[in-house]
Amino acid sequence: MLVRNLIEAIDEVTLNLQFDGEDIVITGITNKSTEVRPGYLFICHKGSRFDSHEIASEIIKKGASFLVVEHPISVDFPHVVVSDSRLAESILSALYYDDPFNKLLTIGITGTNGKTTAAHLFHHVLKTLGSNGSMLGTIYYDILGEQKFHHDNTTPDAIEILKAMKNTVDRSGKHFVMEVSSHSLAMKRVESVKFDIAALTNITRDHLDFHQTFDEYIKTKLHIFDLLKEFGIAVVSDEFEHIVNKRVKKVIYGMSENSDYRILSAEIDKFGTNFVLKSRFGEHKCSINIPGIHNAYNATLVIASLCELGYDIESIIEAIKSFEGVEGRFQFIREGTLVGIDIVVDFAHSPDALEKTLITARKIASGRIITVFGAGGQADKGKRPMMAEVVCRYSDVSIITTDDPRGEDPEEILFEVEKGVPSGSPYLVIPDRKEAIETALTLANRGDMVIVAGRGHEEYQIFSDERKIPFKDAEVIRKILLKEYEKEKKRV
Ligand SMILES: CC(=O)N[C@H]1[C@@H](OP(=O)(O)OP(=O)(O)OC[C@H]2O[C@@H](n3ccc(=O)[nH]c3=O)[C@H](O)[C@@H]2O)O[C@H](CO)[C@@H](O)[C@@H]1O[C@H](C)C(=O)N[C@@H](C)C(=O)N[C@H](CCC(=O)O)C(=O)O
Ligand SMILES: Nc1ncnc2c1ncn2[C@@H]1O[C@H](COP(=O)(O)OP(=O)(O)OP(=O)(O)O)[C@@H](O)[C@H]1O
Image (cartoon, rainbow, N blue to C red; front, side):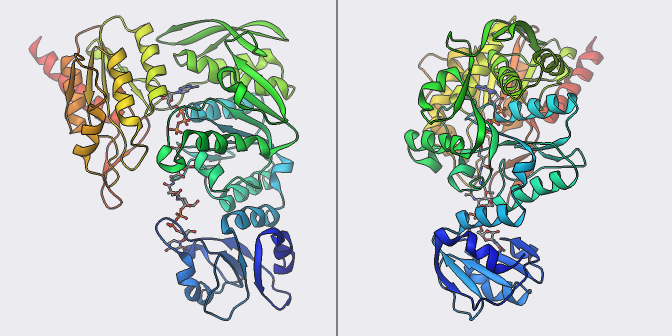
């Protein structure tokens, strides 16, 4: 592709063009110095940790053909100065990869909680119904089932998104499901993508470190509906329907009367959630193998979306039955049966997610509930006491421990969480996470339920950029249990 054609596309953000119009052929596009190859167009960003304008000479030495920058550079080299290099990146990647979203069924899921669960379920159902495609999300990216890998971002930058879409198109993929984080909407990572379905699960307290105010957070999330294709559909959970005033085709799901896809009744047990769904297709019995009314919502989001796209409701419901759940989302640790305790690992790390998880636990636990939880560092400090309040409201014993301090003083985080404990609530503060889990398992009697919240599938505890410690809740629990189990066997 010629630089000339790419520059034309970013006219709206162009401030100054240093380019004599010669025919420069671009062989690739990147914003990472490690990826630059001869002939590449390089986009400079002033980021949170690094400003790649400062390494412009190094990029040129590596063979880049053209630079997109946000402020003038001191080297004499073809470049364009733009007002917003992240927006420019979005526009350029869509053009470079030939708008691949137009050749795919594209699903974008946003919301504070439930994105990962809904995205995995969506991908599963589409595959079960015979579609081949890709999915990008917090736990892993799955490109046509051929490449599965973890990425640091739930939603990556525009270049990576568009490249993954193009890859999917080139290998005859049909669908592309992606979680759309509020950070990605704010940072224009998805700005050039067009969706067939844009779904909103919910918007509750989180990420205010990044968005500053709740209003700004809502506004950012709702931007997903500006990214719909001409006949695209907004699929919105009933509680949040009133905030979506955009002029889009809107389909509502939930438990309230005004829902197009209405959950009439739901029953929860350890094995999952059974519910009756009423829609213009009649009443249908549905089930999903993860406990929780919130998971009936996640399932209904998928059913509503696919029905609106023309899929047969009964086939969708059947396909959901074979979904095995998502790692770290109300995941029972099987070895708990060895000691007669129900042990659940859950990713809940916001007040609403904790509430949903603990309400579910209350419904299915036969004994007491002991909850181990903590709050992450360098993230929304205001939610810390709120998390403690919710946990204490639903738990018989709450144990506050360390999550990912990410450079913050762990003791300080524990202190801020502890401020939310209502007076009279039984709780402990145990900074070491393994010790906290061990204590919960020791306190638990047969029939009790232990919830280990906050980290779900995560494999490392991040103390700082330099200090990451392997720590996976499920594995730690198993190791503790097996030791206990062996001891118990010796005693008998
Ligand atoms: C604060 C933030 O969002 N940062 C994101 C941002 O990085 P940045 O631009 O600030 O990166 P930087 O390290 O300062 O580097 C600036 C530029 O220099 C380039 N660079 C840098 C170093 C170098 O040696 N060479 C080089 O070329 C970088 O490629 C980049 O273009 O853009 C990067 C590419 O898109 C992201 O990977 C990165 O996400 C970081 C890892 C992150 O943790 N982000 C979080 C806040 C986030 O986005 N989270 C949401 C999910 C939230 C949730 O639901 O929990 C997500 O979607 O992941
Ligand atoms: N629809 C929902 N409404 C409220 N809470 C939910 C919902 N679905 C899941 N949860 C809770 O949120 C936790 C995280 O779920 P999930 O990973 O699906 O959400 P997410 O939006 O991807 O989260 P994150 O943005 O933190 O990665 C679950 O473990 C559960 O506690």
